[in-house]
Length: 83
Image 1: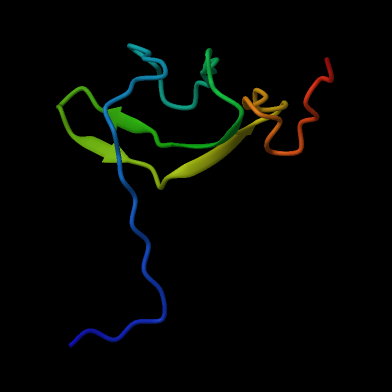
Image 2: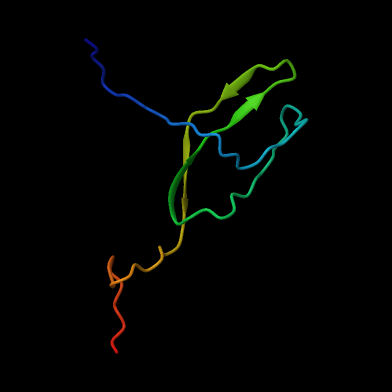
């Protein structure tokens, strides 16, 4: 039996947003996540040092703003055009 106050489950994928080589300690890098659909998306950071040791960050979220595409039939608050 397991008793706990909370559980965090993160599903990590292999979709690569960006990659950087030879980044010195203390340097800052930025990346653009293009083609991101409207809504909330998760990401994490994987870092590998010169000796092959890897560290993973905690999962983070980003929200892509905008309006989702209208659905057929005028659903999700979209008015259907009158003919």
